[in-house]
Length: 398
Image (cartoon, rainbow, N blue to C red):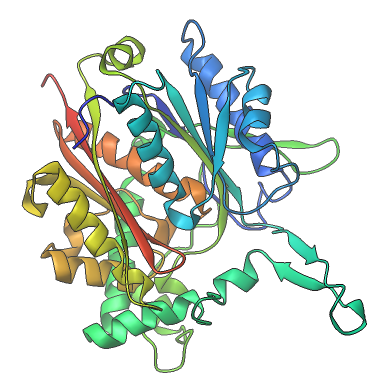
């Protein structure tokens, strides 16, 4: 259990998420993330250097990623050291845990976790192959090749979801019903002129032409989910339960969270009566080609290390790239579908990789504040049949 790492209330943001090839498709994700974070920090008006180390989370390579964290920090106007972290969909979880551990050990005062990614226009890498036939190069499409095949198993990610669904006995009807519920939960975040999302979401100014900029204030590319619409879709895999309506879509975006000491968190908090502590971390690797099962053992580890059970958790958020993720999570941990992922989840608002779980963490914090405090559990799977989870504790004066 961690006892010293805190997140200031409001010490975080997420940009809108844009479906790939949308408004954020032309921007280098590192430059866009650093620019957005700098504007956010300026609006916060925090005095002095806001952070002393930068964890840059990114999974899809961008030009000049070699310099990664230090380049991003320089663009933000803060010359601090840092590191670049890549752990597929659990990149944000790992960044926050590493930041929390640095506080726990007294190594850092206020590390910032900046999560950036752009699935649009993914890089195509050419690897030299001088010993190959005729010196033919080896090429790799960072997005398509890796989503469509784990080199350790040869299976696409959607097949790992179907493996879990088939073994657990889940049906197409359940997948469609869950997708509709998750869309309805997302729509709740749009009520009252997006009141919930505006608690944490900041606009992004992106370049869409040589001399043209666009201001993106809300998610782009979210597809309405209805029973009639889902019934018209064919399974992605023959005899499978998942359609394009019951899985996530690639997206672009960025997010950031500041992790610091209890005292500094109170100083920087938008509401000093709110306290947010990073409590525990869990991780797991499940059987080959069963990726959506991995969040369950990761969540159990995080809960055990926090000294609580699933019934002690006030807010649960999951990264759910496939319906099978939440169907399995609910079945194994004994929670109802409607008991988690209020106000949105990655199945609906999209999956820009590194920022995805950061947004889930932020939404979990805000929901917990609305509920008067409590434990927040955030869990999700990641490439390579792995999973990670975090438990936070939100206290309010109410």
